[in-house]
Length: 120
Image (cartoon, rainbow, N blue to C red; front, top):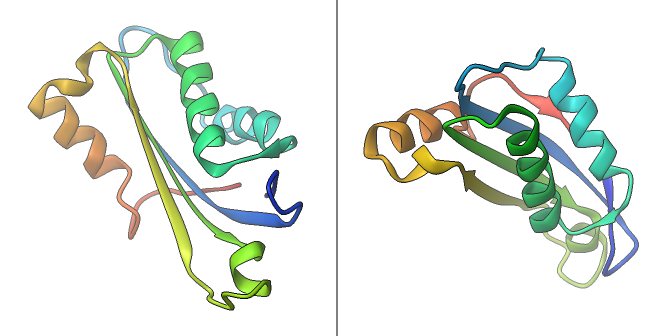
């Protein structure tokens, strides 16, 4: 969960993380903890995705990393629009992110419709 800095209304959703390690790994429980460090601030979903990805890159220095956030924003549900739609952001990082095999592996790991999920 986080608060939209534009409307001061909450948004919440699911985070997907996929990375190709280059020696270092992180315990699974650490990913949601790290994400919550950034989510506790007034935030934009796009910046939250990028900040989290940058922190993981700094800690692990993986060959490639993908972070996908899928969230529902109260500002869309309760203000004017009245739509219960989710917004998806995807951030790719690392030197291997442009390699076709690495990109396919990362994107299959952050599928929005399946896979392990961590609540924001």
